[in-house]
Image (cartoon, rainbow, N blue to C red):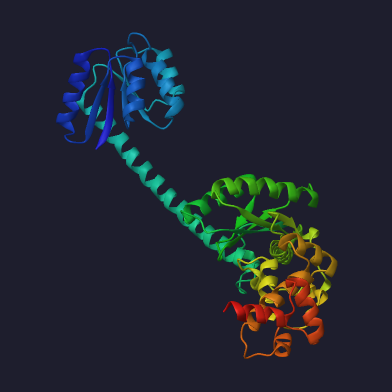
Length: 412
């Protein structure tokens, strides 16, 4: 059923026209009335009719003024002038306003029916075209999303087979941003908002969420590398507002072409991996990596743990080995000096003190088992010289291993 508005200052004209339409075209129209131009504008805003029959000469705002106002908001609405005035100036203005028909009173029933049939056919055709356009647009959007997902996973090294010609964006130059976030309430909705915001501040591609990570690939501007960090910092603040949770971010260098973007992503993932716990964003240039860092596979470092957390887990499992600062720093591809500073800042202890604390705590646990002699405990926690072990144990606890065991036994 179509909506029809009849605007005329004569009640009998409105009612007669409605009656005639209802008889000639039964159950096709829901009809509303307006007694002047102002009322017609209000009814259009309220009811959104498909077709408007408008008289010209009405008190207050006349018909042509009302049409001009309606056209500002509804340029495609079907409007028919129905008037007793056959003036050229009126017809000329009506044409300029895009009026669909100009009918002179008295109008024959056949004319009204013909006009309404014509306009409803146009409306139906236009609706079909709009529906087809929306369907096509939706399909293209789905294809774009699929292509975007596949391409970004390719850049992240998660899939191997992708035809670069099918890339949704042609990146001449670009850089990657790797993002880690906590579990989100309403995850799908929030991620969509975050991606929409990222696309609003720069031309970019967004990866799907992989575990606790997703990535953004931005087209680079001519501003250069120095602009990417403040850009990422602003981006981080807005994304955190949307997510309502802390976010961590790593930034890669500006690179050219698809291979360059893959390299930028590796850098961004590494920058995120080495991000200190007291920071939330880091550029790869701020990480003093050793030459051996290049072969690291981002798949292996895309875990929820930070580099220091993984080092701590490693030390808890390997404290009994003869570990050196240089060896552990090399295992995470950092220079010993930088690793030492970073480790102390994040754990509150030097590397040596941290390992010593682990060994002493484990030694306490083992000393409570009287089946083990002190020499065995010494070797089990990573010391080769029992005398040296005793000195370190006493320094840390104020007791020798023997005194600690005796004290523990007396309490038991």
